Length: 269
Image 1 (cartoon, rainbow, N blue to C red):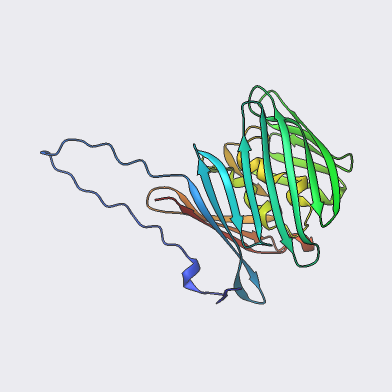
Image 2: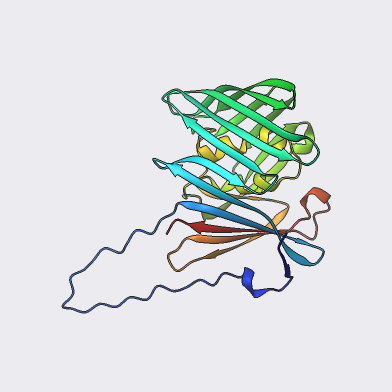
């Protein structure tokens, strides 16, 4: 674990202005297109009045599709596979309590490239368990309902001011505000909080890696802010988001929502 003093300046990423010059004799040149392909996510949290690196995710791509994710957070490795009508991934996780587990997810895709139905086979030691998944969407392509193995289900209500998610069990209920922060990067930024959710089954239940791969519904064009938190954003000189700070509201007494996180984004250029 890497620890830093609470007010360590190294966590504050300065926005560097772009400096350019031109003259009447120079021909106009189109500005370079800076990459929006995120190749690394560093996640920090505050613990015992100190900054602590919680996890680092390294993302690889093939033909602009997420192909591989590796992280030191519980030693996870994910490999993706895409085809015309199918999608799948293999997720390996090493846990100090459960040991090594592997989940193989396979899904059929609709004509628009979204998951319709799928199944996940989870192997822990010699024990194997299979669960079936089903996804439903509205006319805009946003997910409205998802069911997982008959044990968990989620209903998504895309209201005029809030996205409300009702889960069964109810511990997964959540509300999100619609922000004005663009969500047009190489993967859906709304997957970030799922990557460090300490409830170990959320990674599977919410299908975070399917969301990262872009096969579980139309991506909402802006970052969604959970109502139990306030958010701060920082950009680099090229207008790209480089830091998201997620701070719990003082009025929020839910112990599951009292953690401060920093998400640091690194691009391939």
